[in-house]
Length: 117
Image (tube, rainbow, N blue to C red; front, side):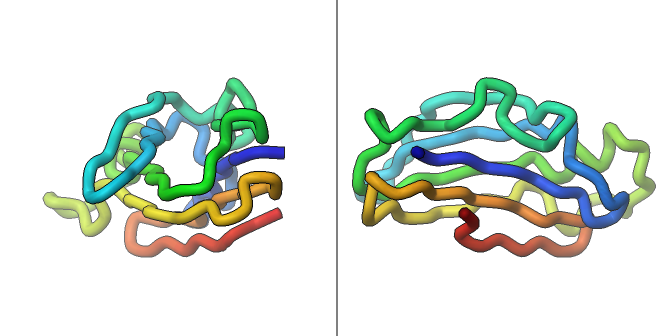
């Protein structure tokens, strides 16, 4: 099935529509940008999977979520600098034949992630 992500805004109780995300491959401390995208109304990549099974490889990856920009655009009054600027998730894919779903639950002050299904 490939690799996907989904972001939920736990402050407002909704998908994080409009959040900017960057997707990288990583190797030996080096990150290579694969794509940038903005989350759709469901809080997902508008193009669907980040990688399908044919292109997902065993290795390490990074997702970077622009949390500060998202909450600023929503008009949330926060101190400067914001507590969370960008949330960076580094993760590994050991079994590229399986589906890897990387959700993010986020507020201006906290976040959680897990390997979803």
